[in-house]
Length: 285
Image 1 (cartoon, rainbow, N blue to C red):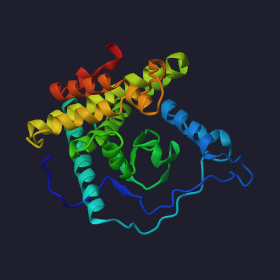
Image 2 (cartoon, rainbow, N blue to C red; image 1 turned 30 degrees about the horizontal axis):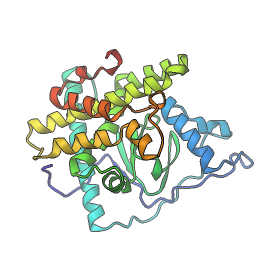
Image 3 (tube, rainbow, N blue to C red; image 1 turned 90 degrees about the vertical axis):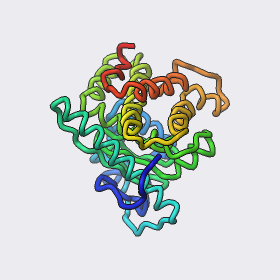
């Protein structure tokens, strides 16, 4: 991608110097849970967009507030911070314009950078969870180490592959602003047997929205040769079927929560080719 290093987004929160925090008893004598139980509660929180950590008692916080500290960063990592700042600002400017054309207001999301673990309004998360959007605080959370994993473990290198990941999470923010996320949550509560199917459709729409931004960048000649292929490869790399195979499992479509490699790349490509959010209606396809 064509971009000029330098500067940080005003929507960026650098919390890489935070301790991450662990789990403690709540309300002085609350329940303690291990990381296994925390992982289960985190999945439920992210899928159903509710704070399932609240079942532990107290005020619903999962752990102690993270202690802030100085941020140490290598030159290479600082360049990556500047890159995600560029993508964040560029994508949000695109959505701001799209919303304005429709007579709507786009409220900016925040991007939180962290290391190892973080406390969000959706609960406690570890870096192994991967990037995620929390509708409770309207923030995207990313451990920059995920980009190394994207390249080395998932075989999806390139700056546009990295940009796709952030643009996908911002797609979830767009869904929240449009009311789609709330409607899906209500549908999941009414039909828990279809919760995974609704989740897949939500994720595929976020892929398509990432493509809408990609279309915009192509129109402004920000993309370089090979960028589109990088993005499509990244979308396919994180398909549920591929992840299940990497885990040594058989492919079980009924357990999908994000969609197959073919679906994810296909919806991302649809957004790239169309550039129209209205062409991203995965709920009627």
